[in-house]
Image (cartoon, rainbow, N blue to C red):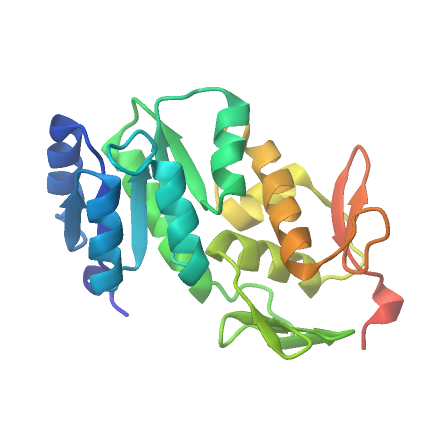
Length: 234
C-alpha cells in the first residue's frame, strides 16, 4: 500500500486543533476528521483506515471508550492525544490498546513522524533470520503479520506484534527497556521505557502467560525482558 493511500481517522473535538491537524496531515495522507466519539465509531465502522489519531477528551463517548471499542474488532494503530502529562495517565491509555501517545501541545511534524513510524512497522524486516517462529503452540508468522496460540489467532496491536517478534527473534537474549523502546517504537522520549512494561503486560494477558511462572515472556529485574530460553527453540 502506498503512503498516499493510507487513510487516517482524526478524532478531535477542539475545532481549531482538528482543522489545523487535518490540513497538515492532508498534505501527506487522506484524512477523515470527526469531532466526537459516537461519530468516530460510526465512521470507523463504515470505512477502512490505516491509523487512528484519537483525542481522549471527547463529547458523547470518551476517547478511552472509543479505543476499547476499536480494539474489540481491529488492530489498527492508534495514537492518543491527551492534555494529561502524568506518566500514569499515558500508561493507562497504552494499556487500553493504544500504540503511542502525544501530550498537548505538540508539533504537527512530530505527529507525522509518529504516524510514519507506526505505518512502517509491519514492513520492517531488519535482522530477520526466520520468517515463522513456533514454540509450544505459539506461532509467530512475520509475512502475514499475525500470531496464533494453539491455532487461534491472537489480536495484537502493531506495537505488541513488533515487541513480540523482536524478543522472539533472539530467544534467551535479555533486552533492556531502552533497547526495546528504540527497536519497537523507533525513537526515544521521556517516560517511554514505562510503555514497554505496559505492552508486555498486554502481551502476557493475551498469551495467558503468568508472570510468576512464565512460558514465553521473562522479566529480568533491574534490566528488562527476554523471550524463552535458547535451548527451547529449534
